[in-house]
Amino acid sequence: MATDFLIIGGGIAGVSAAARLSHLGRVTLLEAEDNLAHHASGRSAALYEPNYGLAPVVALSHASGDALRAAGVLTPRGIMLLGAEGADDAFAAECRDFGLTEISPAEARAGVPILGPRVRRAAIADHASDIDTDLLIQGFVREARGNGAEILTRARVSGIARAGGLWQVASAAGEYRARLLVNAAGPWVDEVARMAAVRPLGFTPLRRSMARIPAPDGQDTARWPMLMGVGETWYAKPDAGALIVSPAEEDPAEPHDAWADDMVLAEGLARYEEMVTAPVTRLLASWAGLRTFAPDRVLVIGPDPEVPSFFWVAGQGGYGFQTSAAASALVGDLVAGRAPVLDAATVAALSPARFR
Image 1 (cartoon, rainbow, N blue to C red):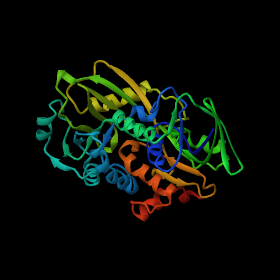
Image 2 (cartoon, one colour):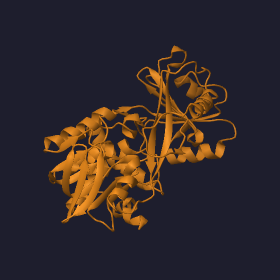
Image 3 (spheres, one colour):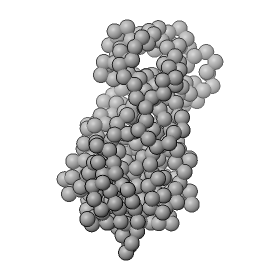
Image 4 (cartoon, rainbow, N blue to C red):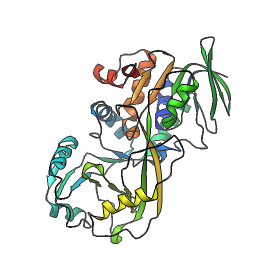
């Protein structure tokens, strides 16, 4: 079957790219799993924190804010940084980087009553929001399908070749031909590149585990901010009457359907428990996802400089949802040959040409 744009990967990167490219031609998206957003996109902490990450990532996040608000997918959450004794320098640096305002430990406890005596420093901001990730994904899917895009699940790719100026892709859903191949395969992006005889860029999938625990001491967590330890050694986020706690680990892993490491999860929960008065007595659930980063921890968006018909939308790391509006707009601009809305320095910082 012939198409203009063939996208491999049905996470937030792939479906948002499909939405933008559907205005430019025929789009086919192939997702290997039974459902879209099965891997990292389905296991996100779902927070919009626009000051999180390196400068090009922050630029994408800020550029996405208006579109995410207009889509109705953001709900105010706030963020609180917590520091123990001896963390003063790191605490000050993170306050500056995240744009936080320091408050007293007593003020912090007034908002989050379970905070314990080891909390010596606290800072807050109200610019962080929860992201309704399902609503965002479905919005992009509706846009794409409304423009005639074909979005297929259970369509694992088994072979990629190039002949007659077109990409020839074999999958469980059939064989496809396309003039542009979009690599949005998350942890598998380098594997897709190898299948296409394109040089990999050196992406690393990093496992992050999470546990969902009951609301501590039966507290109403609905208005609590996201809590974060200095150095991102743990975080906790309210979630539907419960609390998600993560050790925030970044352990390299091969691409796979990730699961939580019990020992790492226990260590992270212990770091959380050191800062609160309510011990963790049971888990409601646990899971893990792979956050995939380029060597410089910045997203990769653009045509491969050696094979321009191979387009990278990769390395979302922990920023995929909060950058999706601007990142996918850049995909559309670059493919259409339009001047990007983003500034030239940011576009260059995101380009795969930086690795060649």
